[in-house]
Amino acid sequence: MGMDPVTAGMIGSTVIGGVMGNKAAKADRRAQADANRMSAMPYMDAQPYLTDVYSQGQNALNSALDTGAYRGQTYAGIDPLQAQAAQQLGTGGQLGYTDALNFMGAGRGFGQNYQDIYNIASRDQLGAATDYARQNVEPMLAAAMRDPYRALTEQTLPGIDRMASGSGNMNSSRAGVADALAQRAYDDRSADVSASLLDQLTGRALNAQTNQFNMMNSANANLGNLYNTGMGQVGTASGFMNQGGGILSTDAQNRLNDDKARFEAQRDFEMQQLNAYNTGILGGRGGNSLSGINAVTANPFAGTMGGAMMGAGFGKEYAPTMFGQQKPIGGYSYGAGNAGSFEQGTYNDGFGGNNLI
Image 1 (cartoon, rainbow, N blue to C red):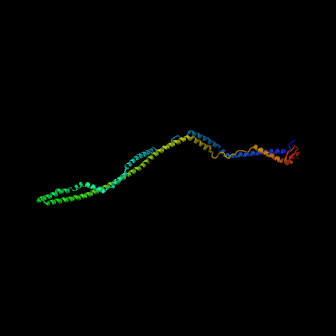
Image 2: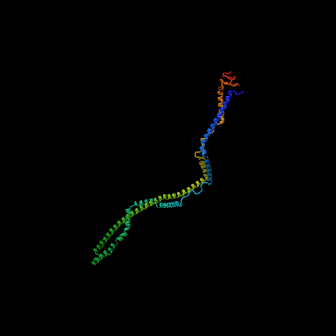
Image 3: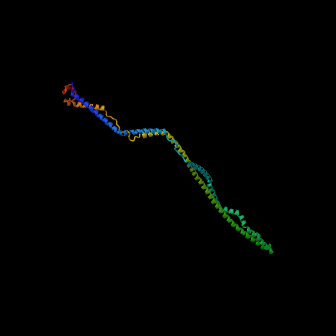
């Protein structure tokens, strides 16, 4: 007994659908593989060179790690002349500071001195000058009147006596009047000279007091300037010490910084080299990294199954028509029969009954 045409048609549709689905899936698979291959082409072209770079990079990394960080001197330090200059600045500053204190100590009393000078200037200067003249006029008057006194006692009075004696009038009134006139003339001369000397001595005393006052005031002003000079020199001397100490301190700090940097360079060298290798070699493909690669999802088996199912559906839908048989409405079943004949069967008419065909 042969297979009825409808069944054969359905089987044939299933087989044809499976073959075509398998073929289409394989074509899709090849297309996806070709697309991935084209996306990977830059990387594949560069792969031999990258492999060489990786090898050389690994060698360079091993060489760097074996060599280690630089262990030589990295800080020159200040020049000996600079160190000497810094020491001299400090020493000069110390000496200058000591001198500045001495200057201030010497001039510290200028304020009190001004008070004393003011007190002196407030006194009766003319009275003091007059007292000075009176106290010192006698020796000067005696010296000034020495010759007139000698002339009076050695010449004038003895001459009057000789003249009176020669005329026999030794004790006469005329002789006495002559002696009195000579003595009066001498006394007048002595009074005039004394007054002149007193005036000169008074003026001299006033001038001396004025000069002394001016000199005291000037000297005291110099003491004030000396104090201010010392005060200013304190800052200058301190600046020298600070400058010299700053040079040496900076050098010492730079040495500490260099020691710290050398320690950290030794500590971090291996990590830095590994990071450089990872970034520059492993991560530096120059744009030739794999990108745009998609998974190949086309599956021939799934394509075969999908095509077979579509073919089976096609055969079920159109095989009866193709072979001249009528397809019932609703659910139906085919019985065994001869080719080209449609055997009686039953179908559910949808109203709860089974009808015969």
